[in-house]
Length: 240
Length: 240
DNA sequence: TGTGTATGCTGGTATAGACAACTATATACC
DNA sequence: GGTATATAGTTGTCTATACCAGCATACACA
Image (cartoon, rainbow over the protein chains, first blue to last red):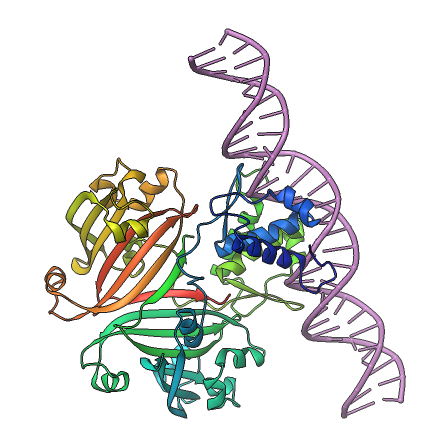
């Protein structure tokens, strides 16, 4: 069942196995999974190891515990994990659309005061400014401007951005942690209407995202304007 | 330091103590906290207990770990915890505004097909429908319609809703778990413009929230239209 | 008929110890 | 001066065990 020699920790292998069995409908929503002590015997590990695996799945929302009764499968979610920090590309693929890109500009300029404050840098330091139209099934979906501190990654090229920026960031040894998002509604101005091929004053969904590494340094600020007629923002939140 | 007789678990007391010391700036952002073995001695508990406390704080985003180096304080967040499932009332208080309420209607009616599907019930079952204008500092902020399955809480009154609905739900023995939110932009229609005292075709932020108990049963569907000129939706998301 | 109560299950908390993997620093050597 | 190498400190993983608290059931007793 488990590979004790594997470099993958055993609690992780157990997680994957339980996920697989839920996916195979071996366990059904509302039913309980075997007790922790039973899993201890099944996987031949200690109970603490089982608990580490189960805790992670509870954290993800796949399982829930009830003291004195057992651990149960949660109802299936409406979509494959709404939560989590994803790129436009991942987001569109998940929705079954073909993601596309049209680069409008790629420049390095002085940050200026408001931007510098958000990105935790000095106003006279430089940032990359990348402006793009984002496409879904070849139709304009959003107008997006990304700001990245130049000092953090002086080797960055338009290609890195166009391919997988997050993968590039992680290849530099940063670990992507969390993001703060502000979402608001607005009316399309002339330049937005033109780029997105929509009427003037059509509804837009504006999303501003500030993304941080795990040690709390901001590394990108993204300002997007999505066509309201084609895009809904989906999120999942948990009670503390 | 810790009270070993307390009904509060020791890992929880340790969490609170570390939080307090961060708040007091005894530990500063970017600095490391004492090593797990040091904390083991300080609190006179086992290392696993310390790890349980620290793990929870890492989960909350207050700390982050680096293998082989230590555990560090994360940078302060821009606001007091953006994440988490909160009511309109809590949300407004957090923003420093005085929350208010104007009840438009409180009815029980047949769910009908689309609603029933979302709430996991039959189309001929009944739901509460509560329509309200939400105020902030006495100014209309949002138009809100809430649907609640009648069968789940047949004793519900307008007062429960007006005071603290979530507290009432939990007093019935349900545990509030997670919510799925869809956020979109729209233009104000006539009835919305009137209720919110804004021009026709002004921008609106539409939020639809489906809230579940921990065992996966949906118990409320809320459809809100917020004035875009006065409201931004803030969220925090984490990388998986 | 009902009502305790004992029992055996569940998850929750906590201990003490072990070794692995990773990081930084000091030391010895060339 | 530069480069291995040892070493000590860190978090990561895992074991084996113990007792507590909540829950359901069966059974004895009134």
